[in-house]
Length: 87
Image (tube, rainbow, N blue to C red):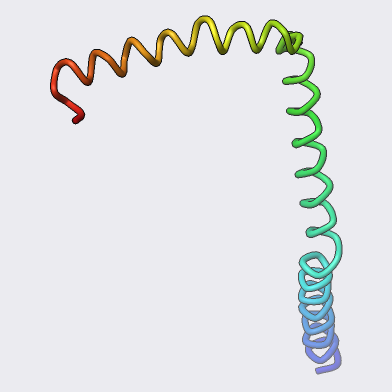
């Protein structure tokens, strides 16, 4: 009979500790790990993008915008205007 009560108390003790660990995991440890991993992932992508994409000077970007893209947009606009797609 004592063994039965010992096993019941042991199982209740284990169950309470599992519930406590589960609650404390979602209360303190897991959110901290998630925030840390999200920040690390975001910084990793920022560093990779910064290292992979070349830098352009401002004068090159303005020349690219005014010479290439503006002409392309005007050609598309005139095409749409002359075909009657826009009024």
